[in-house]
Structure formats: structure tokens, C-alpha cells
Amino acid sequence: MNAEKEGTARLIVGPFNRVEGDLEVRLEVADGAVRAAFVSSPLFRGFERILEGRDPFDALVIAPRICGICSVSQSQAAALALAQWQGLAPTANGRIATNLLVAAENVADHLTHFHLFFMPDFARAAYADRPWFAAAEARFKAGRGTSARRLIEARATLMHILGLLAGRWPHTLAIQPGGVTRRAEPRDQMRLLATLGAVRATLEQTLYGAPLERISALADPQELEAWRASGPDGDFRLFLEIAADLDLTRLGRAYDRFLSFGAYPGEEGPHYSTGTFADGVLGSVDEAAIAEDHTFARMEDRAAPHHPFAGSTIPDGFDETGYTWCKAPRLAGQPFETGALARQLMDGQPLARALVAAGGGNVFSRVIGRLIETARTLIAMEGWVRALEPAAPWCAHGTNPSEGRGAGLTEAARGALGHWMEVRNGRIARYQIIAPTTWNFSPRDAAGVPGPLEAALIGAPVREGETTPLSVQHIVRSFDPCMVCTVH
Image (cartoon, rainbow, N blue to C red; front, top):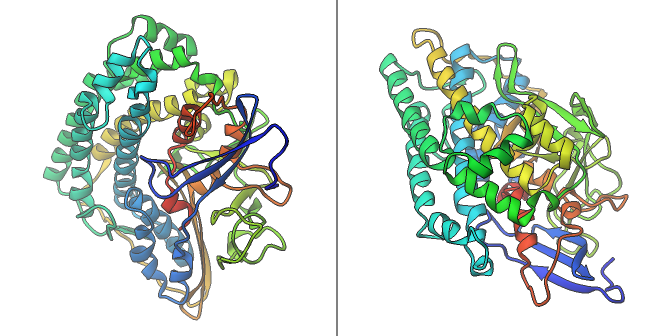
């Protein structure tokens, strides 16, 4: 597998800038295109091992420190695992407040990704001959882009929600198995609505150039084409222009199998529904069918894939077969893509379904999925704030069994996040985590099947003399990787 084929050049791309954590991609290139890709996460961290032997509630302190940009999602996953272990359901206020905290972080991540990670690539000199370049440079040039500055200010405003409801960010301790530790008073509701109103105004003026409701109602790819041709000015329209010129729909398609654990639980189910999409058919998630393959990960226990409740994280630094510290999670033996596009697809958002039906998961549809979700989530947050009842309970309390286990399945900005915990004699005996980028950036499995990004990179064009191909960068960033979560 490491031997170079005749007529094939090997190209190592990395480290990537504007990516959270370390990432390296080895490409085999022939006839001006990628023929094979091997994605490596070169840094092992070992949070799962750190948690073993500790009090179960230590997970609320330690697990969020896996990451500094999606720590609230890690908090929620840990709290959900503890709640299942305790047999505890959160209060209505606790559930809504947790949704607001996770949503604030997820929207902030989407804004950061679009304005600071993804779009600056189009403000590079390599695109200077394109008709849209001057606008892209003015809006998104690193350190100087006008849109980037405005939206980062809006992101900072959005973070006030975390201050009001969680006390701090990142690494809050506010989220608990039974709800949240801090209640919101009526005056806090007004401040929350004012904060969301300020963020809405910036998004409608700068990002979309239109009301959020108009964005969330988009249902047909032809509407996007009409928006590109004559829609309101904004970053959204500029992206549509760039995507049409570069034909981003033809870049980065993987397996068209999507996974979501469901985000933002409500009384009647999650706001963005749980489920899978495979072979054009929507289905439910069979959690028991999740397993992690270690064949090409630098881990021990390679005999067979493990369900997380039976899994292990024992690094093998002398392994010469593995090429990454990332495991290979599979659902029913198959790789699945996860993220905002998957969530919107499961939730039945008509534009997401139409884009996947037309061209599958690709660079364009993944970015559109995030932009649609950002608008929909902010609208939902306004409703959740109004649904809070300050006089009602905010946190329920349970008992701690000395034996048991629990799984916490939720959605971070980048997709499906799961924590699996087993308790023996009142201590954590096993703690396993599968993060979204673990799904998306997984290596090959025992059958030699590449992970989603590895598959998405096949066919990417590589121009003569390119050492860091633009096409590869666009595909990698379309997944919005968080590598520190990947190698937790």
C-alpha cells in the first residue's frame, strides 16, 4: 500500500493552516488527479484513558477540555451519558437551556468556519484572474476582510448567551445530567432575545442580505441559481457566484451515506432529527451497529471492530501498519459522513434533500447545509428563549448506581458525537468517544475501504507544480475538521 505505482507521484499535504489541530494528507496523483488518499491525524491525546478510574462526574470537567471550540457539545454528550447511567431525565427548562448553549456554540462554529476557515481560500492570489476575486478579497482576505470582521463581532455577541446561561466558555460546568446549574430570570430572557436580535441583524445585513426566514425556506436548487443571478447582495450570493464559476458541486463527493444522532431534543423529538441516509433511503440509527476498526489506526486490539461499550484506546507507537491515530468508526460495517448537511437531510429540509439528490454530498452542498442550518438554528433559538419558564425547576437530581453504563449521543457543529461510559464499583471502567471528525476523517478499515474524506479526495484535480492543491484544500475544509477532537 505504501509502494508508489508506476506513473504515480506521491504528494504529502500538511500541516493545514486554519484547521483546529494537526492534519496530514498523503496523496497518490496520476494524470493530473488524485487516485488515492490517506488521511493522517499525527497527534495522540488520550482523554479516554485519562477518564478511566475516575468518579463518573469527573467526565463533566475533563471531557469538555478535549476541545476549546466545541466544548459545550462535549459537555452535553458527557451529561447525556451520565443521565442514562442514572436513569434521569432533565427538566424542561434544563433541556431548553442546554439546547440554547449547544446551539450558540454550533452557530458560532459555522460562522467561524465560513468566514475564517473556508472563504479566505478564495481571496488567494491563485484566483486573481477570476471575475469575483476583488469582492472575495475585500470581504474575506485574512486579517482584513470586511465581512469577516463584522461576522466575528456578531460571533462575540452570540457568546453572551453562554455567559448568561453557562457563566463561562469554554469548559462550562453548567450542563448537568438533570439540566443546568444556573436559572434565567425574566430580565435574562429579555437580554437573550436582544442578543439574538443583534446577531440576526448582522447575519441578515452581511451574510445573507435577506431575512433568516427566507433562507430557511429555500427548497429548490433553481432558487439558488436565481439568487446568484439577481438575489440580494451578501456573502451568501458571493459564495453562490464563486461556487458556480468553479463548479464546486463536482468536487469532494464521497459515499452519499449520512449520519445524524439528532440535535436539540424537544418534547416530541430532536429539532434536527436522528437518522441515516444510505443508498437513497432514510432510516433510523442502529446504535448497536456502531463499531470502531483499528486496522490502520496506531492502536492495539486489531482483531475485530469493537462497539464503544467494548472498545479500547491503547496506543501503539511502534505500529507500522497504521498511518493515523484516528480510529475507523463504521455503522453496520460502512463509513458514514456526518455534519450540518446530514442533519438538514434527516430533518427533511427540502433544499438539502434536493442538493443531495442532484449531486450528493460535495463541497457546495456541505457549505449550503451549514448556511441553511445557521439561519434555521437562530430562528429556533428565539423560540426556545420564549419557551423558558423562570419559575419552573431548572435541574433534576438522581442517584449514582455503583454499576451501570450510559451513552450520550448528540450533535456538535461538525456532526454526530457520542460518549459511551461504563461504571464499575462507582468508578469509570471504560470511556469511549467517537467525534464527528473521527467519522469523516477515518482511515481505511479491515476491508480496505477508505474513510469519507479519503473517498471524497479521489478525482480531485492537481495542477502541474501544485504542492498544496487548492482543490484538496477546498474538499478538506468543506468537512470543517476539528482534529483535536478526532484524536481525543
